[in-house]
Image (cartoon, rainbow, N blue to C red; front, side):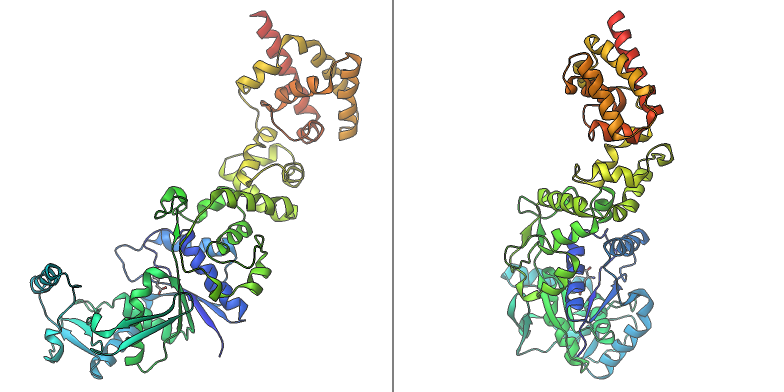
Length: 467
Ligand code: GLU
């Protein structure tokens, strides 16, 4: 049988890394088995679903390359089908109408709680054959026996039917509830494996009972543990519960994020680096840990640096250009992005850092970094910088060799160390004390900008010494 998995997020909050890891595991499972991966947006909660959250799901999945073979399907477009199934369940005696008031239900709940029991509906309307149109509809859960969830991660988990009450499958306005819609969809879409967060484990026996009532085979299940904060607590927005697209805007590469997420709770020996192809061929849901894993932001940065260093320049072109756009930097005013990548890619952990450390190529800076200026733009360096200015100005070909020898020659002539000249030069042309090698920096900056900024640096020292 062809394997079919799905990712079924509810767009009630912005998709974050917990959801993405679930999506990744489902996607890998499908790819590993040469099956199909389906995207389904569970947007039946109309009050809490937002268009923005739907867009983050679509953009986030596309950014990460987690492509779907079918969908996206929207549950709000399937209400007719849910109604049909609810009617079928009513007709076959697997569901019934219930008119118990909120007051009565509250009373049953309070009584159960005070006895220390789990609150559950007592089934009063179960045999009344009510026909009220605006009643809620409940599923007639079997009253005895048990349901074994043979979970691929958790092992066999057994639920007694006596513990499960008759859940509401349609509200009084006729709208279907989660456990019903998920079963109808998983059935209609031919899903063979459901991989989802373990917060859904308790829903599973109920869903299996509905499958049975519909005469359909329930899929296999795998419930994966939560992702926790580094302190072992629920993820907060600060630790990654914000939109997954924040990672893109922070300069993380999709490959790095996927590699990071696949290792949260899954391992193969002690291998840390997995290309997408390697993940697809090695992934086995049975190797997913039963216990929750904590995020480790340093590891994500380490992986990201690895992927930046090893990426082909052309793969970094678009994401880096997008970040410059986001920062409102006009890249027409400076070096080609590919040349920039060449000299920066060994130096930064994120593309955002790369962009930030390269803005001086495109924008003139207003002020020098105060410490760097204090340390390096001092009167003693005034004459050497002037001499260097002339020497750089006279260069006919602006390339690394010529730039380097101009600096070396000036340093030699004045009997100062190369670094003692290069560092003030760097501060003068970049505004700060850190940049790629000085010859690369000057080459990409271009002769005009270099001379203009060096002239400004010289004037800065002159003004400083005269004030
Ligand atoms: N829509 C559910 C959620 O976002 C997931 C349902 C499922 O995977 O069965 O939590």
